[in-house]
Amino acid sequence: MVNVLFLDIPQERVGVLIGKNGEVKKELEEKIGVKIHVESDGLVKVEYSTENPEVYFKLKKVSDAISCGFSGEDALKLLDDDVVLKKIDLRDFTNESSQRMKILKGRIIGRGGKVWKRIEKLADVKIAVYKYNVGIIGSEENCEIAFRTILKILEGSQFSTVFRYLENKRRVLERGIWVERSELTEDESRGEV
Image (tube, rainbow, N blue to C red; front, side, top):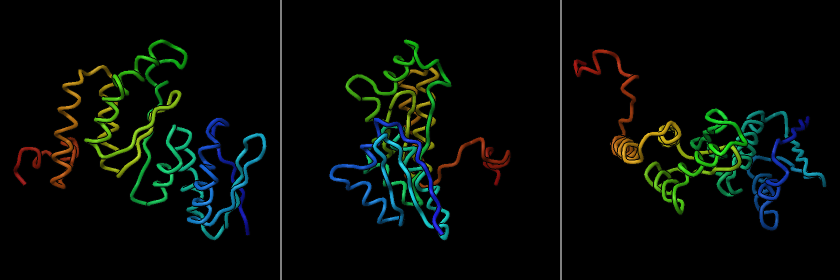
Protein backbone atom coordinates (compact mmCIF):
# COMPACT_ATOMS: atom_id res chain seq x y z
CA MET A 1 0.00 0.00 0.00
CA VAL A 2 1.18 3.52 -0.77
CA ASN A 3 0.90 6.63 1.41
CA VAL A 4 0.95 10.16 0.02
CA LEU A 5 2.62 13.06 1.81
CA PHE A 6 2.69 16.71 0.78
CA LEU A 7 5.89 18.49 1.82
CA ASP A 8 5.56 22.00 3.19
CA ILE A 9 8.46 23.69 1.39
CA PRO A 10 8.31 27.37 0.39
CA GLN A 11 7.87 27.62 -3.37
CA GLU A 12 11.16 29.51 -3.78
CA ARG A 13 13.01 26.58 -2.09
CA VAL A 14 11.52 23.74 -4.19
CA GLY A 15 14.45 24.01 -6.64
CA VAL A 16 16.81 23.11 -3.76
CA LEU A 17 14.85 19.87 -3.20
CA ILE A 18 15.23 19.04 -6.87
CA GLY A 19 18.91 20.01 -7.03
CA LYS A 20 21.16 20.52 -10.03
CA ASN A 21 20.05 18.17 -12.80
CA GLY A 22 17.61 16.59 -10.32
CA GLU A 23 20.43 15.05 -8.26
CA VAL A 24 19.06 15.81 -4.77
CA LYS A 25 15.59 14.52 -5.65
CA LYS A 26 17.08 11.40 -7.24
CA GLU A 27 19.31 10.66 -4.24
CA LEU A 28 16.41 11.12 -1.83
CA GLU A 29 14.21 8.79 -3.88
CA GLU A 30 16.92 6.12 -4.05
CA LYS A 31 18.05 6.27 -0.41
CA ILE A 32 14.64 6.04 1.23
CA GLY A 33 12.54 4.43 -1.50
CA VAL A 34 10.04 7.16 -2.34
CA LYS A 35 8.70 8.77 -5.49
CA ILE A 36 8.69 12.59 -5.49
CA HIS A 37 6.40 14.56 -7.81
CA VAL A 38 6.81 18.33 -8.11
CA GLU A 39 3.70 19.98 -9.53
CA SER A 40 3.89 23.07 -11.76
CA ASP A 41 2.59 25.24 -8.89
CA GLY A 42 5.46 24.10 -6.62
CA LEU A 43 3.43 21.58 -4.63
CA VAL A 44 5.61 18.61 -3.64
CA LYS A 45 3.86 15.25 -3.41
CA VAL A 46 5.72 12.19 -2.10
CA GLU A 47 4.56 8.58 -2.43
CA TYR A 48 6.01 6.07 0.02
CA SER A 49 5.28 2.56 1.23
CA THR A 50 3.27 2.05 4.40
CA GLU A 51 5.72 -0.76 5.27
CA ASN A 52 8.34 1.86 6.16
CA PRO A 53 6.68 4.50 8.37
CA GLU A 54 10.00 6.11 9.44
CA VAL A 55 10.25 7.51 5.91
CA TYR A 56 7.71 10.17 6.92
CA PHE A 57 9.99 11.47 9.70
CA LYS A 58 13.08 11.50 7.48
CA LEU A 59 11.21 13.39 4.76
CA LYS A 60 9.93 15.87 7.33
CA LYS A 61 13.48 16.55 8.61
CA VAL A 62 14.83 17.02 5.07
CA SER A 63 11.99 19.35 4.06
CA ASP A 64 12.36 21.34 7.31
CA ALA A 65 16.09 21.75 6.62
CA ILE A 66 15.48 22.96 3.08
CA SER A 67 12.82 25.37 4.39
CA CYS A 68 15.39 26.71 6.89
CA GLY A 69 17.77 27.59 4.06
CA PHE A 70 20.10 24.58 3.88
CA SER A 71 21.40 23.26 0.59
CA GLY A 72 19.99 19.97 -0.66
CA GLU A 73 23.31 18.26 0.06
CA ASP A 74 23.31 19.44 3.69
CA ALA A 75 19.65 18.45 4.10
CA LEU A 76 20.42 14.93 2.85
CA LYS A 77 22.80 14.47 5.81
CA LEU A 78 19.65 14.18 7.93
CA LEU A 79 18.99 10.74 6.44
CA ASP A 80 21.70 9.54 8.84
CA ASP A 81 20.07 8.69 12.18
CA ASP A 82 22.98 10.29 14.09
CA VAL A 83 22.41 13.70 12.48
CA VAL A 84 19.72 16.04 13.82
CA LEU A 85 18.16 19.38 12.94
CA LYS A 86 17.53 22.04 15.57
CA LYS A 87 15.61 25.18 14.71
CA ILE A 88 15.27 28.60 16.27
CA ASP A 89 12.33 30.78 15.27
CA LEU A 90 13.51 34.39 15.46
CA ARG A 91 9.89 35.51 15.82
CA ASP A 92 10.18 34.30 19.42
CA PHE A 93 12.55 37.25 19.96
CA THR A 94 10.89 39.94 17.82
CA ASN A 95 8.21 40.37 15.17
CA GLU A 96 8.91 39.30 11.61
CA SER A 97 8.91 42.74 9.99
CA SER A 98 10.86 44.71 12.56
CA GLN A 99 14.29 46.30 12.30
CA ARG A 100 15.19 44.16 15.32
CA MET A 101 14.88 41.02 13.13
CA LYS A 102 17.69 42.38 10.92
CA ILE A 103 19.80 43.14 13.98
CA LEU A 104 19.33 39.62 15.36
CA LYS A 105 20.27 38.04 12.03
CA GLY A 106 23.28 40.35 11.82
CA ARG A 107 24.46 39.25 15.29
CA ILE A 108 24.23 35.57 14.32
CA ILE A 109 25.95 36.05 10.96
CA GLY A 110 28.53 38.64 11.99
CA ARG A 111 30.58 40.89 9.73
CA GLY A 112 31.52 38.90 6.63
CA GLY A 113 29.98 35.78 8.21
CA LYS A 114 32.67 35.57 10.90
CA VAL A 115 30.35 34.73 13.82
CA TRP A 116 28.44 32.14 11.80
CA LYS A 117 31.63 30.47 10.52
CA ARG A 118 33.21 30.42 13.97
CA ILE A 119 30.18 28.72 15.51
CA GLU A 120 30.13 26.19 12.67
CA LYS A 121 33.82 25.44 13.12
CA LEU A 122 33.92 25.23 16.92
CA ALA A 123 30.65 23.31 17.28
CA ASP A 124 31.25 21.18 14.15
CA VAL A 125 27.79 21.93 12.73
CA LYS A 126 26.21 23.53 9.68
CA ILE A 127 24.08 26.65 10.19
CA ALA A 128 21.54 28.28 7.88
CA VAL A 129 19.65 31.54 8.36
CA TYR A 130 16.61 32.03 6.13
CA LYS A 131 13.73 34.47 6.63
CA TYR A 132 12.92 34.09 10.35
CA ASN A 133 14.49 30.64 10.84
CA VAL A 134 17.91 29.59 12.08
CA GLY A 135 18.69 25.95 11.43
CA ILE A 136 21.51 23.83 12.85
CA ILE A 137 22.54 20.42 11.48
CA GLY A 138 25.00 18.10 13.21
CA SER A 139 25.29 15.48 15.93
CA GLU A 140 22.87 15.91 18.80
CA GLU A 141 25.53 17.11 21.26
CA ASN A 142 27.11 19.52 18.79
CA CYS A 143 23.71 20.94 17.77
CA GLU A 144 22.84 21.52 21.42
CA ILE A 145 26.07 23.45 21.96
CA ALA A 146 25.50 25.59 18.84
CA PHE A 147 21.83 26.08 19.79
CA ARG A 148 22.74 27.38 23.26
CA THR A 149 25.48 29.56 21.78
CA ILE A 150 23.05 31.18 19.35
CA LEU A 151 20.48 31.69 22.12
CA LYS A 152 23.14 33.54 24.13
CA ILE A 153 23.80 35.78 21.12
CA LEU A 154 20.07 36.43 20.66
CA GLU A 155 19.73 37.29 24.35
CA GLY A 156 22.40 39.99 23.91
CA SER A 157 25.47 38.37 25.50
CA GLN A 158 28.84 39.80 24.54
CA PHE A 159 30.65 37.86 21.83
CA SER A 160 33.71 37.32 24.04
CA THR A 161 31.48 35.60 26.63
CA VAL A 162 29.66 33.58 23.97
CA PHE A 163 32.85 32.30 22.34
CA ARG A 164 34.44 31.50 25.70
CA TYR A 165 31.36 29.38 26.46
CA LEU A 166 31.56 27.72 23.04
CA GLU A 167 35.28 26.97 23.34
CA ASN A 168 34.81 25.50 26.84
CA LYS A 169 31.95 23.29 25.67
CA ARG A 170 33.98 22.17 22.68
CA ARG A 171 36.93 21.11 24.90
CA VAL A 172 34.61 19.19 27.23
CA LEU A 173 32.90 17.52 24.26
CA GLU A 174 36.26 16.48 22.81
CA ARG A 175 37.00 14.71 26.10
CA GLY A 176 33.70 12.87 25.66
CA ILE A 177 32.13 13.93 28.94
CA TRP A 178 29.68 16.65 27.98
CA VAL A 179 27.04 16.85 30.70
CA GLU A 180 25.31 20.02 31.79
CA ARG A 181 25.84 20.92 35.45
CA SER A 182 22.07 21.10 35.86
CA GLU A 183 21.90 17.39 34.91
CA LEU A 184 24.18 16.33 37.78
CA THR A 185 22.82 15.23 41.10
CA GLU A 186 23.68 17.38 44.11
CA ASP A 187 26.39 14.92 45.24
CA GLU A 188 27.97 14.76 41.77
CA SER A 189 28.15 18.53 41.49
CA ARG A 190 30.09 18.68 44.79
CA GLY A 191 32.40 15.87 43.62
CA GLU A 192 31.20 13.38 46.26
CA VAL A 193 30.26 10.52 43.94
